[in-house]
Image (cartoon, rainbow over all chains, first blue to last red; front, top):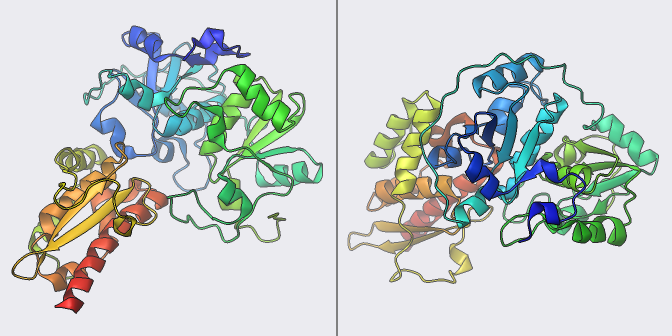
Length: 287
Length: 147
C-alpha cells in the first residue's frame, strides 16, 4: 500500500500509519485509544500504552439514547490522561468503524487534534506487531471542554426529514440487502429491532466498505474515492450531505472519508440511523 | 436457576459473583485462550452450513457426537479470529455440557449468556451468542428424540 502522503488526500494529517504508531508508542504527547465493538478485544491484547474508549460505556449517555455531555467528556479525558494538546490516535476492530465513531464523537466536543490509524487493529496484528494485556494508567488531567456542538457534524431525525424534503444528498452506507429492504440487518448479524425495511427516500447506496482495501482495511487513494463518490455516485463536494447506517458506526467511517479525505464541505452523520428511522411512525420509506 | 448440568451451574455461579468489568473480561479471556477448534476427525473446512450458527457474526459452528451412554460431546469452530466472545462461550459449553444429561442440556436457557457476559453485551452480539446456546440445545433435543 502506498504511503498516506502519496495518496492525495485533502487532509492526510488525520491518518497515521502503523509504522508511525510504532514509533510514537512512548510519545507522551500522543495517546492511543482503542475502540472496538467486541469489548473483550482490548483486554485480550492492545497496543502498548493504549487506553480503551468503549462506545456504550464511555460515549453514550447511560440513560437516554444520546451522547455524554460536557462533564462526562471532561471526566473521560481526565481518565485517559488527555489534555487539549494531546494528539489522540484512534484505532479498533471492524476496519475502524468504532475508531471513526469515537473520533466523530470527540469532534462534537472540538478535540480536533485527533488521528485514525490506517488499517486499524487488524492491520497491526497482520503485521505481527506486539500486543499487550497490561492496562496502562495515566496521571489524570484537567480538561476543559466546550459544550457539545451537534449542529455541524450530527443530523437528528427532524434535520434528516428536512434534508429529504429539500432533496439533499443522502448516503445509506449499509449493505445492498439492507438498503433494498430485503434484510433488516447486516448479513450474518441478527435483526436489531427495526420494524420496517428499506431506506430513506432519495438515499444513494454506497456501502462503507467501498472506501477501503479489503486485504488490510486501509483507505483507498483519493482518485479511487473520488471515482466512487463523486463520479459514479455524483455527489457534489460543496453540497450538504447526510450519511447513515444502522446505528451510526459504519456511517462514521464514511463521514470520515467524505469530511477529511475528500473534503466535502458539510457532511453530517445521522446516528439515529435505521434503528430510529425504520421504527418511527409516519416517516417516509423507500424500497 | 433451572436444573443445569452441574459444571455449567458452577461456572454460572462464578460469573454471577463478578461485579467488576475487568474481572469479567479476564475470566472470559481465560476461557477464550483455551478454545480449541473442532478436530479434523469431526469436521474439516469448508464446514457444512447445517452446523453454522445463524446470525452469529463470529461465524460459529457446532457439532456433537454421541457417547456410549447416550450423552453428547460438543465441538465448536469460530472462524472469525476476532471472535473472542464466541470462543469463550464455546469453550465454556464444551467443558460443561459435554457428557451432561441430555434433558439438562436441552433445558439450558440461552439467556445465560447475559450471566456470562454481563450488561456490556450489545443486542447484536447477545443474539449471536444465544444462537450458539440454542444450537447446543437443539442437538440435545434431537438426540433425546432419537433415543
